Image (cartoon, rainbow, N blue to C red; front, side):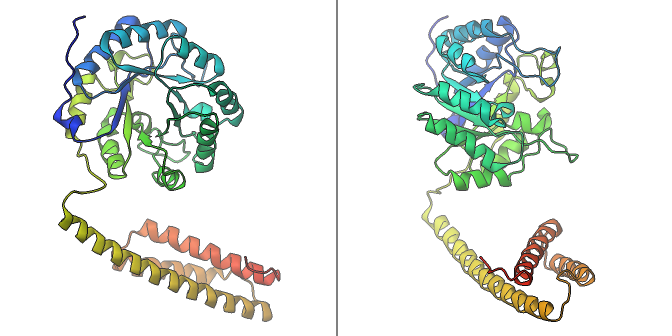
Length: 363
C-alpha cells in the first residue's frame, strides 16, 4: 500500500476528542481489514477497536475468533497506521495482546463487576506501558467503577480512561443499557483527572439513538467516544443492531456540535460568570433554608417523643407530597425532580426524628 499523507478534516481540528471505532467482533480477515480501511479514509479515527474474545450470555454463540484475530489486527495496524484496541478479561489475554503489538486494551463491563477478576488483571498489568480503558460495571454502582479504576492505577498504568457504556436495569427502557447520566457525572466529580469516554453503541442497542447520545455526552464534557462500526452491520455475528457503517460514522461525526469548556470570547465568559454567581448565591440560600427546615424537624421530633406520637404521619405526608408537587409544577419545575427531592427530604426528616426517639446523638 502506498504511503498516504494524513490530513485531518476540519471537523477533527476543532476538537480534541478521542475516537475509537471498529466492529464489535473481528469475524474474518476481510471484514476486519475492510472496515479498517474505510475508517482510515475518514481521517477522524484514532484507534481501531475489535472484539477478539467475546463473552456471551449463553453458550453456542460466536465467542470471537480468538488469538488468530490478533494477527488480523496486526495487519490492520501495518496497512492503515491506525492504533489498535482490544478487550481483555484475564492475564493470558493481556500477554497475547502485548505479543501482537496491541496499543490499548480495555476491561469490559462484565469483567469490571467482579473484583476478583480485576485483581488478577491488575497484577498482570504491572509493568505494562500501554493505556487501559475501564468500562463501567453492568451494576449501577459508581463505587464499584471507582474500585476498578483504582486497581488499574495502583498497577502503575500511566494512562487510564473510564468508559461510560450504560447500566443494566430491570425497568423497561428505550435503551439497551440506560445511561443513568448521574453516575458518570459523579465519577467525574470523584476522579476529575480520569478522562471519560462514552460508548453510545452499548447504551443505545440501536443505531437510531447513537447521534443523540453522542451529542448529550459532548454537552457533559466527555473526552471521547467508542463507537462500533462494521462494513456490513446487517451481517454482523454480534450486536448487529447497534453497529453503523464507517460511512454512517463519518456523517454522524459531521453532525455533532463540538463545544469548548473555555469559550474564547471574554464577553461571553463574563455573562456566564454572572449567571454562575447568581446560582452560587441561590445555592447558599437553599442551604440556609434546609438548615432551618431540619432545625424545625428536630423540634417537631422532640414534641412527638414527649407526646408519644408516631414519627411517620402518612396522611400528612401524602397531603404534603401532593401539595408540593402541584405548587412546584405551577412554578415550572419538573415533577420527577420534585418527587425525588421531596422523598430525600422526607427520608432525612425521618432519620433525624428516629435518632431523637432512640436518644442517639445526631452525627
